[in-house]
Amino acid sequence: MLACAIALSAAENIFLPDFLPLGVKIGLASIPVMLAMLCTGWQSALCITVLKSIFVLLMRGATAFAMSIAGGLLSFLIMLLLMKRTKTSFIMLSVCGAIAHNLAQLSVSALIMGSGTTFYYAPILLVSGVLSGIATGVILKLLIPLTSRFSKGNYYDT
Image (cartoon, rainbow, N blue to C red; front, side, top):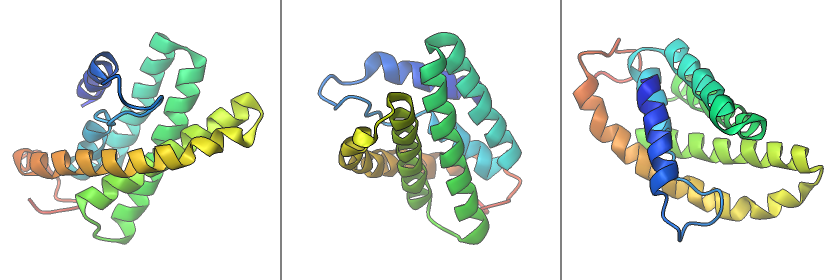
């Protein structure tokens, strides 16, 4: 799953359409994290999240790492809380995770820049979070039946 997350992240960076606003991504690397969370447990998903961010540190530096770890951990925590407290849909789980990821990255950006003006970009990232969350949620929903043999059955019985 970690290798898939890294490969999807790299592919997304290479093939990102030019027409998307700065910082907007689909978030394909979140799919293996969500699959791990749903099929093998939260511990695996947390491990993938942290190791993926360490890979970002090695490849793109400290600023990218700070953005990655903050976004990844907040997204992970929100999705974990939703899974523990509700039977939310895959799409809603993904949308909430994407929005949390974007808000954490905006917060880190504000801390680094020493200014809250980065939050003016929030509307763009919130809309993109909803759209990318829907896209990754749909992909996740399509993949879950294929992973039923690996599942512990800890969230949805597939």
